Picture 1 (cartoon, rainbow, N blue to C red):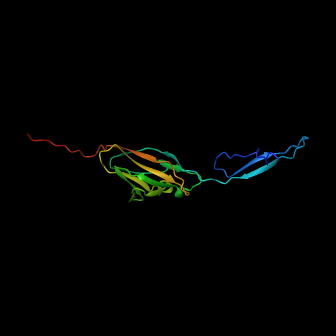
Picture 2 (picture 1 turned 90 degrees about the vertical axis):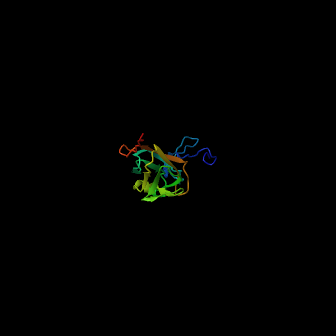
Picture 3 (picture 1 turned 45 degrees about the vertical axis):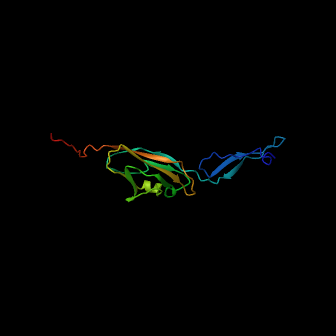
Length: 171
């Protein structure tokens, strides 16, 4: 009767598990109980929004390149494989270029977490006297859940070996 009246319910903890159980018995007014029974629950996963796990800032010399790996840029979505976690570029770097396997990326281009994991994404600074750069992106999963906008910042250190120009005036 309690089950029929909605007094007994089950609430999943929100984890990525697809199976759960609980053990119960039934006791009547006279105190007689049934043997313990195990009730199996099959849980249908829901597509979660991709979560930026971390992105570790990058520091490089002016004019240098950096290849990204999951140690620097990683997204987690336990119900989506890495090849279906898609970075969608919303803002390009101003002082350099992003590349996918050597081909320059443009605004609205995409690449996957698998591309990052396999070292296909790189950034090359343009050699200008700038101290930082950044690019912004959203991440989509296989059912089009979208992450909030994220920005990756790169710190550029002046190259100590860069030639300097000096001028002198003859008086």
